[in-house]
Image (cartoon, rainbow, N blue to C red; front, side):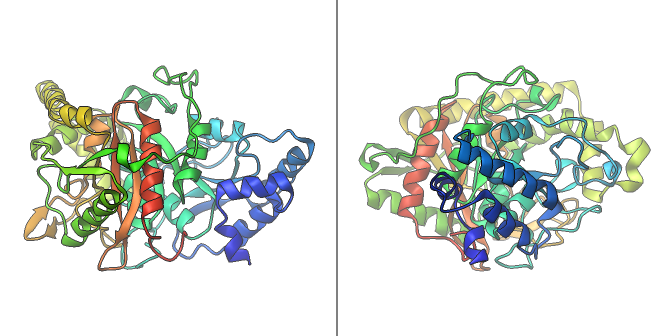
Length: 464
């Protein structure tokens, strides 16, 4: 009974709170009693969460409930929660206490969500895995030999194993979509400015905060509460309108398909599941056409250059004083800042412009682009992003970013992207697809995501 309760959808939980068939206290108790067998969580606030659930119950009784009232929401360890330890997964900040709530946390609290736990990350958000020296790796619940991916891996595993009802994530190069893919949950990178981002990374167009959940409708529920303008983010937009749970008529849709973004080497089981998803959409009546984006490996150089200029430049400030406390992969990433030139950065922007020039005709013709999230379903549990390359089909892919297919859509930050379950790898690890929308057309991505979900069989055995 407890296990069933922990997998209650957010939408169903709210319905139960409204009609009295479920109490926020019952749901919170079940979630808190659930065992964290994979290292998904870094902190739990049981007493505070139960007290907040009692308050939420009273608000439902008084007719004063807010959109997320009483729902357990796990918050990523790198997002400040006022008065709570917030380490960003690093020994450098192991004793740091947040002086205020990060923008996504403030939005979630204002909507009535209850912060009951924190989720594991990598160090400083510098890699596509979860785990480091402060917190050990979060294992994939479908095959514990593999990593949960990251950096929002703790959030994805918490959702997949019933440790939370909703979770937030952040995404600089795929940190929402990669772990969503590897754990059969839904994650959303909104278009630039839809959700407020904390300073000063809100000035970097690669950075996004977004929702993670076990279904498209639950993801929409959290996105509705996270979206909107906040004073702390100059680029946050005030024009959000709530998402509604409607799937489109498939016969009205045209979907572009790319299994390699024009340049990537992709494992056979990944390509198999993405093509199977495309076939399901076609069978439902959608027009699905395979396209060649024309991108090449120079795109990865451009991503690395931008990341070195801003993100690695920020991390590099800690090398002189805190190197001994940092992971090998965080050090390697931070050191990329030292080889950067202004000419390189200008060239990276030129390449980004060319990437959009090549993609724009596709997104003018088609409603969305369907593609893989990564070249491989996952990497091994102890994967070192500063280590040896990954071999895929005889090709060597760089251990840090070379196997990811998510970062192009951080470069093209106006494009909303949903990570959604596609199938299972030969290893048993889930495989996810990316659904890429037109600039700022977040709503259409959710509409098509609902159609994909309705035409797809359940993936995995945990979050159903």
